[in-house]
Length: 117
Image (cartoon, rainbow, N blue to C red):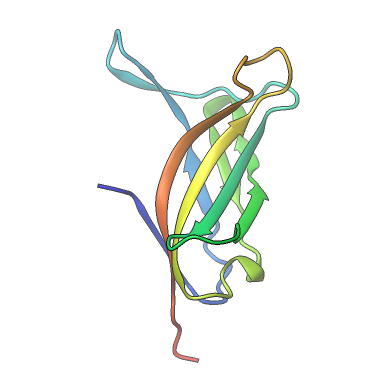
């Protein structure tokens, strides 16, 4: 079952909080993902589920990069349109740290809901 994040149209709080982990198949334990290396970016993108242009294209801010904790401060333009979106969190590595350069680590449903006013 997909994770769901819901916000009301025009709201910018609460911030989106993300804990990134690595799964150790030997111990079956999730460990915090250390993303403290210089130049590592954690990105957030969202597109309408029915297709179309990217609605959100932002960078998360480190709260505690060594322990994989990040936040995204919503902008009003992120939540100004009601609808269902597909959100994605990815890690962009600088040259030399990861041969793939981009690693998608989380996908979720993002619902922007109508508000009363």
